[in-house]
Image 1 (cartoon, rainbow, N blue to C red):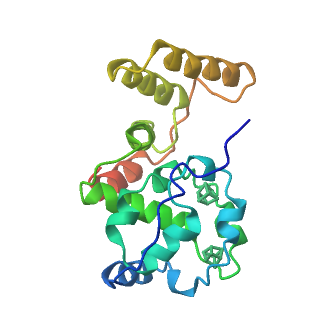
Image 2: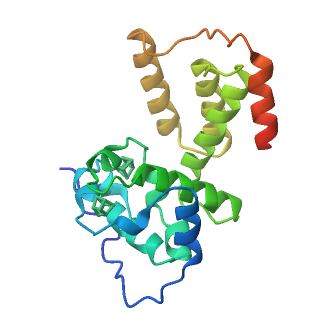
Length: 198
Ligand code: SF4
Ligand code: SF4
C-alpha cells in the first residue's frame, strides 16, 4: 500500500529566529506568502506529499520566516511537479507552485546541493530541448538525451528500461511525437534563451 506519510515528517519546526531577506524577495516577485494563515489546504490536496520532506504549507511558513537554508535544501521543491493543485486550493490566492519554482531557481543560483539531481537534470534537458527545437519541445530528443544521461550516470538497467517502456507506451497511444515543427520565429526564441544566459 502506498505510504502517504511525508518521508521525514518528523522534522520539527522549532523556535526559529525570523529573517526577512527571503520573504522580502518573494514579495518583490509578487509571491505574497505573507497572507498565508496556515489552513493547510495546499498540503491536503497535494498528490506528492508522500515523497516530500516538508509539506507545502510548511515550505510557505518557513519561507515567510526567512528560513532560507531549510527551504533551499529541502527535497519538496524538487519533488513538486508544478501541478498547481495547491495554488488553486489556496483561499488566499498564494501561488504556492510559483514559490516552489522560485525556490528551485534560487537553490540552483546559490549552488546548493540538490537532493533530487535527476529532477534538476530533467529540467535542464527539457529547456535545452526547447531551445534546440526552436521554441517547441521535441519530445523524442528529450527522451533520448535523458535516457543517455541515465545510462552515463549509472542508473540501473531496470530504471532505464522502465522509462523506455513508458516512452513506448506513450508512443503507441499517440502521446509522444517523433517530429516537431519549429516556430516560425526561431530567431526570437534563440534571443530569449541568449538573454537568459541559458
Ligand atoms: S492553502 Fe494557502 S493559506 Fe492555506 S496553508 Fe497553504 S499557502 Fe497557506
Ligand atoms: S504544485 Fe507541487 S506542491 Fe502544489 S500540489 Fe502540485 S505537486 Fe504539490
